[in-house]
Amino acid sequence: MELYFVCPVTGKEYSSENWRIMGELHVREGLQGDRTLVGSVAVECPHCRSVHTYSVEDLTCPWTRAGR
Ligand SMILES: [Zn+2]
Image (tube, rainbow, N blue to C red; front, side, top):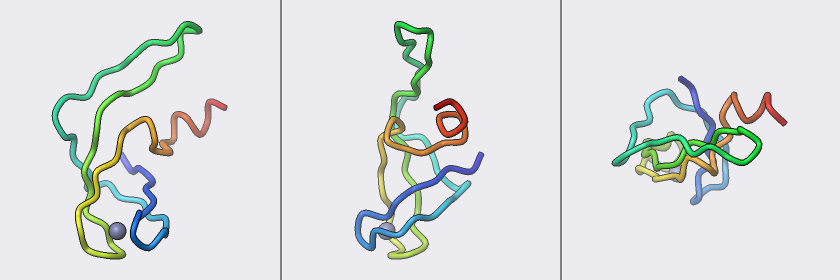
């Protein structure tokens, strides 16, 4: 699945399918039955060529984009 990231070094957006999960990823269910993925992913950045780690909650994924 393709996810969108923002490089913290250059501030540029990019999308990648080559991310990987760091540690455990789990789903937290909210009071309204909304679901939030909790965990971290690491991805190699095409702009600065280093590996960035992101909290999944901070990512703009297709699900949250469509939901709100
Ligand atoms: Zn970067």
